[in-house]
Length: 92
Image 1 (tube, rainbow, N blue to C red):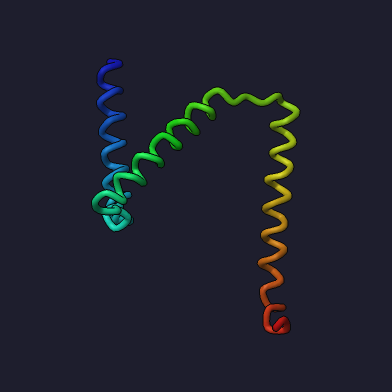
Image 2 (cartoon, rainbow, N blue to C red):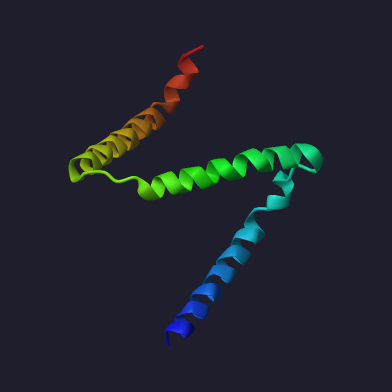
């Protein structure tokens, strides 16, 4: 039964990537030749290191609550700035 869930998960991942592929063409972002190799050589280790660092990163409950408050404040500021969109006409 566990093996069935494993293959079911693979199926859902495949379907998810197919939907994503229909919406965004990642080939458009490819950099051909040597410059692409250089970019790939530097980007992949950065992503790998960031992933490893995130896995080892832990916060106390107090710090998690502080980050949550910052996120809510950020959302509030974004909404406030969006609501002032009509004032752009007056600023030049």
